[in-house]
Image 1 (cartoon, rainbow, N blue to C red):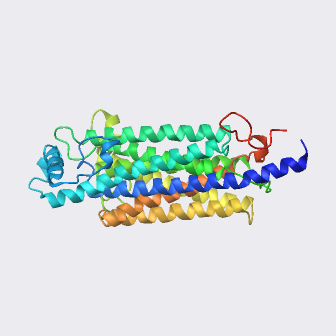
Image 2 (image 1 turned 180 degrees about the horizontal axis):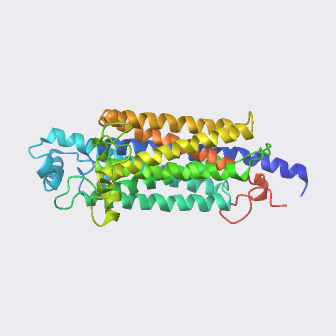
Image 3 (image 1 turned 90 degrees about the horizontal axis):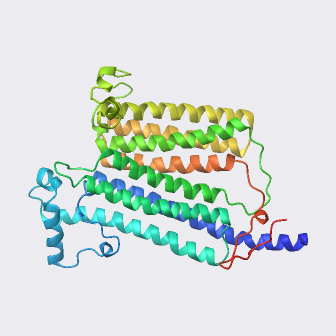
Length: 376
C-alpha cells in the first residue's frame, strides 16, 4: 500500500479514536458518580427502601398518593423498618426512597450511555477487534453488577437484618471499581499518533501493576469496613485500643477462624489499616524509583502523582476514623478512592508495552470490512 495513503487513512482514524476515548472517560465519570450516590444511599440507610427489583418498570417512581402508600407498606414489612425505623412518617420514607431510586436510575443511565454509543461506534467502524472485545467484557460485567446489587439488597431484607451483608456490599463496590478501572484502562491505551515512548524498566511496569492491584484490594477491604460499620470502633490512630497490633486472641476471637476476616470488627479494621500502610509504602517506593531511574520523565511525574493521591487518601481515612465517620468524610473517602484508582490505572496502562500505531489493527465495519488501513 502507498505509504501516503496509509498515513491519510490513519490520520482520518484519529478523530474517531479520540471520540471513543472521550466517551470512555465520560462513562468513567458516570461510574464515579454512581459510586458517590451509592455511598450516600448506604450512609443515609436508604438502600433497603425499595424492596423489589424491577429493571424496567422501576424507572418510574410512585406518582400518586396510592402508589406511595403501597411502596411504604412494602417497606413496613422489612426488618429494617420494624427494628430501626418503626413509626417513620411517609415524608421521611420519601427521602430514603429518593436516594435508592436515584441510585438505580443512575445505573440505568450508565447502561444506556454504554450500549447506545457502543452500537454507534461499532456501526461507524471506529472499534478495533481487541477494543470491541474489551468493551463487550465490560458490558457483561455491568450486567453482573446489576445482579450483584439486587443480591446485596435482598440480603438486607432477610429476617433479623437491618442492613445488607458486608461481603456483598464489598463485592458490589469492588465490581464497580473493576468497571471503572476497565474503562480507564481502555481509554488510556488508545493512541492516535506515533509519539515516542520512553523505555521503562520491567520492574517499574510490574510495580505499577502491583499498585493498581493493591488499590483494588484496599477498596474491597474498605467495603467490608463500611458494610460492617467497623469504622465506628477503635476511633484512635495509630493505635487500636492502645495497641499498634491488637492481640491475636482479639483478632481471631470468632470460630471458624476464616469468618473473622468478614465478621470480626477488629480484624476488618486492622486489615484495612495494614493494607493502607502497605499501599502507601509501595507507592512512595515506586515514585522514588521512577524519579531516580527516569529523571524529568512523564513516568516519574505520574508515579509521584499516584503517591501523592495515596498519601492524601490515607490522611483522609485517618481523619474519617478520628471523627467517628461523619457522612461528609466517609463519602469523601469513598469517592477519593475512585480518583486514586483512576490515576493508578492510567499510570499502569501507560507503563505497559505500547502497541504499534493504529494501522496495525484496523477497525471493522458492521459488514466485516476494514475501515482503516489494513495491516502491512
